[in-house]
Length: 185
Image (cartoon, rainbow, N blue to C red; front, top):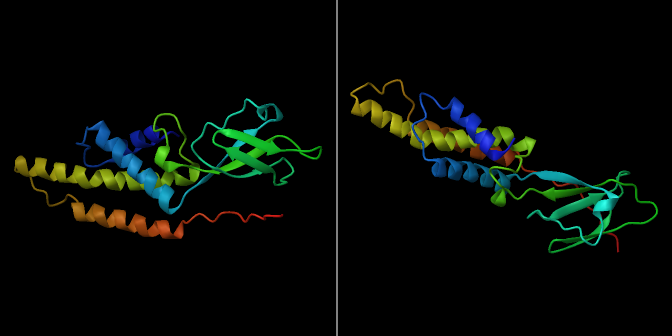
């Protein structure tokens, strides 16, 4: 699911009604949720590398840094990532395909094309919703008051701020634990 697809699913569950139609604001709130998850928890993604990928013309086009590379037998591979040039040291025991693990760069995620890691879906959904709910409920309350309708049953901005704070607290428990790496000289 792309970030924009996730945003569309959030917009469908805003109640009583989504009154914010500023796409730049909504995209900014989505980006804030993604960056919060990335800064406090993070995610590891992987990409498959075939033997034909490891030629001198191969370039690493992602903004993320590679964390580890394993072969099919789970043997750790030595590699060098110099800018976008990736060199992997292979030998006769290397079994392809390789798997490159990298930390997802949530600050530079493409909202239209990149995939949100599965482990981030629920949090980013809920956090984006909480961020949208705060200014949206204020607009709803203002519209009700302007129409002289009762706001008695409506949530308040403080209610949604409490939800956001609970999500912030939950992040502490979700911290990503990186697998150990052995360095042999």
